[in-house]
Image (cartoon, rainbow, N blue to C red; front, side):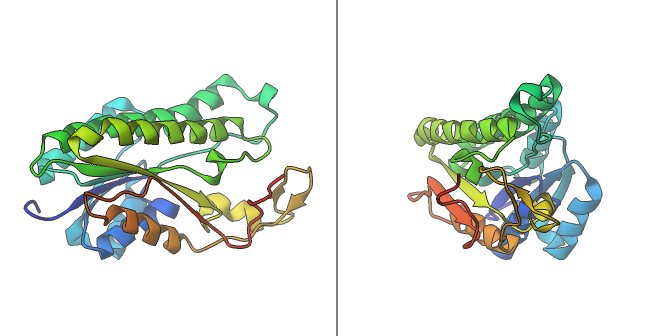
Length: 252
């Protein structure tokens, strides 16, 4: 499985955006390492995509030891890494800021911010030492990296922080030929956003409830694959992919 094959790793690859990105990358010829907490969804994605171009590695990215094991497996299996998509993420219960328990805050920070930092560290160590040198890191930001939803302090704070992480990797990775970009996604149709189209919908900034339009997750996968497929001299630093009719522009 080594040689000239390009290798990508996707965290949170079993469902939603991660699944869509992994399938799109496989379609474009990448060998994709599928990382996520549950083995069964990862194996389903591998079977749907290209079993010969995938490697399933069950990983809880909130555990630093499991992150190290993931990248050690990548290096052992392929000998190189071309693309990391830091996708895995979670939110906290929608409660008032002053009532959010510390353990819920920490859980979101560990998954949405610390894990991408640790994954990026491991990826950069491989990318800087391989031949040919370099690679690409893509971070899953969010529309919430620009404007918050009500009752989303933990999620929104981490997604704002991802923007800083993206810029730092892009800057510090230059000398190694490592590019870094961020994709900010608005209302992809995934299990995480099912609540947007159920019942009264979701809370808006003006205190009302409303259902919100969504877009196919496959379109996000295509966007990630586009970013991943760029040559080493080009980079998408920031990309926003959103449902055309969603109430983002002018939110609030």
